Amino acid sequence: MQEQSDWPAHASFMDELVKSGVVVLGGPLGDEHRVVLVVEAESQDTVRAMLARDPWSETHLRVDGVEPWTIRLDGRRAQSPPEARGVVSSDCHGMHASASSPLPHPTG
Picture 1 (cartoon, rainbow, N blue to C red):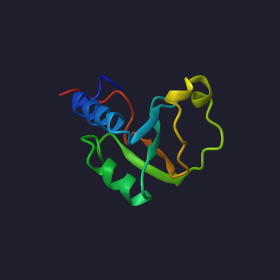
Picture 2 (cartoon, rainbow, N blue to C red):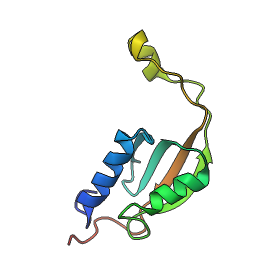
Picture 3 (cartoon, one colour):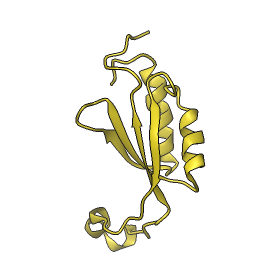
């Protein structure tokens, strides 16, 4: 992924979504062409609008779907100290995105 053009801008955009608490979990699947993100969002339209601002939108990244997801189990909460545990929101949306063309993309 890092070999693809405009990687620093995309990485910075995604890092900001993590820092702001929008992206909860994310990363590429085993084929390295598809990505799954778990996000805190008001609606599917909010997720799509947010990802449309990604520098990779429509070049390296295509949103395949946005699905509501109710979290029933979260092992990360059980492992954290009581003062660090928060309420798991049932408003999370799982977002599946895939690269629009095969890796690697030319850099530049």
